[in-house]
Length: 333
Length: 288
Image (cartoon, rainbow over all chains, first blue to last red; front, side, top):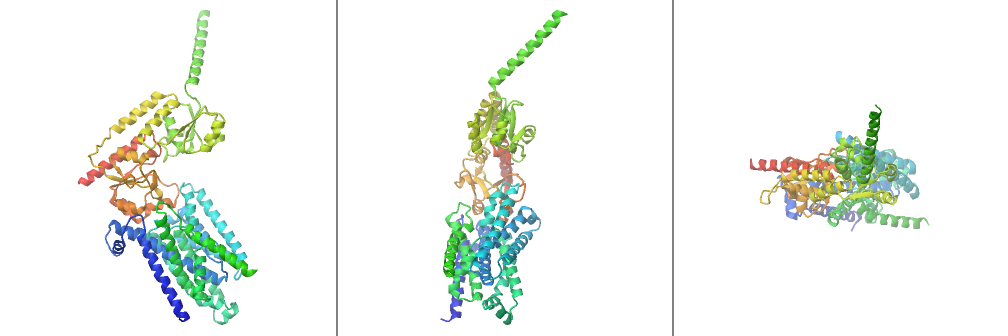
């Protein structure tokens, strides 16, 4: 089988898996609804209980799982290619935590109640600041250690500010919501959240997917990339804007879901070969599969509990992260 | 003239003696420096204690959303339930709840203070028992009995027999919590001739009612608190969810301010009355 055919097959398999996960996501919930009823409800116009459960409670959750997972996987692949660092990922380098802080600012000051768009925009700006800080602190092609330290600094600062803001809120519920912003969840999100975040996420996916050629050229070094007609400055702006826009909008409705952007590109890299461009679409699909599966697991395993999505992704991601570090150390030694 | 002065002095002496005797009598009878550090004991003590004997209540007692007696609490000094401030007040009786400020209570006991703990009321029977016990520890049993009599009179005015209709009601709070079996809210719902959706679903205590189950259970009424959030939080976003909005439009609402049910006090009868009125309104709407 040729390389291209193999790649096409992989994408097809990932796509089918994502569809299966999405269907599972529509079927799992506290109210028992059969597959056929759910399917019928999805295309019906009536306002029966089943229709409103499927269309207004489960469908937004499924759509957000796809969108949030796709953008996290994709931005992980882009950041790893662009910063040429295997540990670059929105969660690890603090972009998600910073986006959470922006969203917290918008919601708890009451700004988002007046202007709903303030929610994704504040998260986006805050995430953008974090990416720029990481780049200034660590630079491209920086050592793994530098980027981790910079990420720890940004993450802990943003996390601390989030906790502080919520602790100072006079609303007694706010302090409990620290967990949501630091761990993420898709519970009881509505179509309003989909409408708020989807345009930004889709826009950033288009931007990030278009960076494939530039990222491929960058693997040959910046000068060679220049001779191939790649403008490094433009690539930088688009990578930063795309990540901030997508991760910002996703985090503003789902909280910070960690490790997706780390695990997915690493699992898929051996399957797509060394070209960064091929990793992009595959990581977007893989991210959607991971987040959808984690969300189905959360609902099926602990239906009575408010179990956070970030807990599941961290349970998968943290050991993986350690394994990556060990492998990396061995390579250095 | 001299005799008159003498009798005057005698009178004064007698009055002084009487006052002194009264003081002694009071000191042996009722605690005179009572400090309460729990919202529920605050309210019961304010209703039962003699004026001036309750010297401090918790800061929550002044919150008009949580306390029925916020105005009265404004005239009494407040505490934040910390051992140090309670110690400085030199109380001869400390009233506390069984769930909150545990470490403070054990510390105060170690320091030799008399602490009376009150369990939160989970039923109307608990409400009566707590009122009665408060009367006992404050040495004002007659005041407590009068409150109980009034409470029972209000409740007996509401009587719904088993064969009369019991519309279903779903209490729905921030973060999609509801009240299941074994809660004061459940007890008030039953007393008002309604049937609690959460209890029927087998929920116990204050528990989550998933949005999907709320939709499936199709309650006749939805019970909302009238608590306005002091600041925004995600917890209240659930009320903006289109599904909940639809439900609130198509279902009659019973608005029962949280303060009537947050603590079991004689005012819990107000909650039962409000629920009963909502039931009556719903039944009228159904028959039209």
